Every structure is written in C-alpha cells, then in structure tokens.
Image (tube, rainbow, N blue to C red):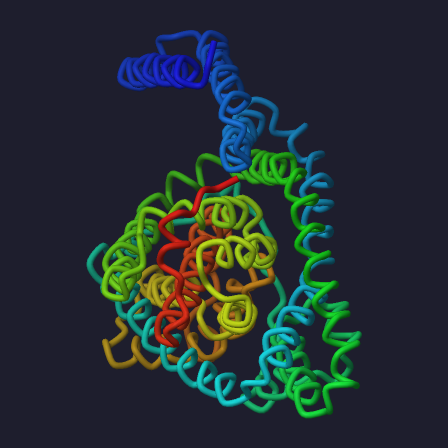
Length: 458
C-alpha cells in the first residue's frame, strides 16, 4: 500500500458510501441504520489510512473533522464530553497570541526603523478593509432579499435555548476598547487590537532609542518570535484532536428539526459566502497577481481550524506562519492580519447584514432597502473586534435588532444553527485577512511571488 493506492481506496469507499446513502434517502430508510453506520466507519478507516501515507497536518485535520461528524451523529451524548479536548486546544492556542503579536510587531517596526512604512501600511490596510467589507455587506443584503429565507420560518416547539445577554456599547466605548488600560489585562483577556496598539507604540519607541539600548530588546523580541513559532508547531500537532472534538460537540448538540426548518437560511449564507470568496476575494488575488492555487494551499490549515473551532483567534498563529512561508514579509504579516481581526471581518459583516433582514422577514415586517443599508452599516461598525470570540456575532445582532425596533424572537431560530453559520463566517474572516496581508505586501512591492509559487504545505 502507498499514497496512490490509499487515495484510490478512499475514492472507492467514498463513492460506495455516497451511492448507498443516496439509495437509502430515496427509498425511505429501507437500508438498515446499522449497515449504514458500518460502511461510514469503513470510509473513515480508509480516510485514516490515506492520512497516514499523506503525512500532512491538513489531511489529518480534515480526517478528524469527518470522524468528529460521525461521533456526533452516532454518540451525541458522549460527544458532549469531548468539549474539554477542544477547550484545551483553544486555551493552548490563546497562550500564543499575545507573545507572537508583540514580538513580531516589535521586530517588524524597530528592526527596520522605517516608521513611515508603518503609517503607510496603516492607511492602506484600513482603506482596503473598508472597501472589501462593503462588498460583503452588499452581497449579504442582495442574497437575503433574493431568497426571502425568513418568510414563513417557524421555531419547533421542542427547541428551547436561552439567548445570550447583550451589552450596549456606545461609539465612545468602541474607541476606548482600542487602547489598552493595562497590557497584562489585555493579554489575559485575549483582546487583539489593544495588544497591537501597545506593540506598535512600543516598537516605534524602541526604534527611536540609540542602537546600543535598542539591540538587547530587539534580540529578545527576535528570539521570542522564533520560539513562539516553534511553540505553534508543537501545538498544531494537537490540532486534529481539538478540531475533531469541536466538530463532534457541534454535531451532537444540533437537533435535526431546527436544522431542517432553517436550511434555507443556512444555504443562503453558505452560497453568498462562496460567491463573495469567488467573486470578490479571488478576483482581488487575480488582479494583484497572487497565485490562487498556492494561496488556497497556504490557508487550508488555518481555515480548517477556524471552521471547526468557530474562532478566528485559534487560526491566527498558523495563518501568520503560513503567510510568511507564502512570501509575505514578517513585518507586514504581523501588522495586517491582527489589525484585520478587528477591521476586516468579511464573513461576519456578510452574515450580520443577511441575518438582520432575516429577522425582519421572519417577523413579517417590511424593511425598505435604505433602512437595510443603514442597519447593515451599523452592524459593520459595531462588529469590530469580535473575531476571537465564538458566536459573539449573535450578541451584536441581538443588540442591533433591538435598537431598530425589531422583535428578538427570530434570533432564537438563528441560535439553533448559529454554530454551523459561525463555522462558515469565521472561515471567510480568516481567508479575507490572509489575503489582505498578501495585497498590502504586493501594494508595498514586497510580495515574494517566487516564494509563493514554491509554497508546499507541511
């Protein structure tokens, strides 16, 4: 057995499993459920065999996601006990965020002493972020108005969940949250933007002192950055277990009746996100002469982690590392991607614009296009900084629909499938931010296309 034969075996078992399940669906469950379960596990065994020969972390992550789905379907109660494994993985990843941001930003700024470039990257990044998120907003509004997914929606009588508490924030609060009150507190809470602001100012301050005093801190930061990337590699070996557990918990938790009744909304979101990635993001990549095929390989690992854990933050270390290998300078990666986690939430913006109109449709309230646009822009502003928090978008949505006089009960319906929706929007957030680093690097004339073309995932 080799990699080629294992791939053929995987394809054959997938084909057989798909055909048998197709026959089962259209013959009203005429095939024994036990037999269906057995052939699914045979397919999983062939997938594991392929992963062994492939020797790729991405393949193992994808295999663990399939295993997680099956465990969630077959053993839903047991799957809930796996939550601790996914939480261990997320906690270990979160320990990387603050030191890797601080060290790479300080090295990027003080190591080159080009303070003008920092300012230039800042305004270019903000301009790019706002243009792209506006496209996401428009696509979300167009999609929900075309499908009318909220019309006729209902919540199953058996579905009961508590809505999360909303915290009202003024524009003054949003601005204050950008600046760290206590850097240790910001690191403890995992607040990305305050850490970035502190690190940028620290790097600028270090760049202005004399060379003798700058050198020890710069060497420390370089050593810390190198160590944290090695730390990331160690943690990523645990990723398949954390990702598989997260998927198992999600699948075991969802009820099929709520999923069926909200399938139209779910398909609307996934379809509109696919259109956004293909029409907007890949068009930008093509225009900026970024090799799309290699880019997809570079983001496959961080995207799969984000998809399973529903947290962009969990994908941050590997996303930064892969973008450096892809040909984006460290100083640009360490500035653009963390900043994008606050200002460039493409998937979240699209979801919020779509979900807000869905609430109005479900409640039978006609909402003029102008009002939809105003509400979408409001959501785009209030959603800044939620990328690292799983399902924080739901809290933003609750606060906004209340302020626009819409009923809250349709959000209960969204809550039923929010985990599945969060997987998609978080993945697009990661794709958007990694592409942004490539765009800014290309804009600065520092994108290494030869290195990108030669990119090979580990």
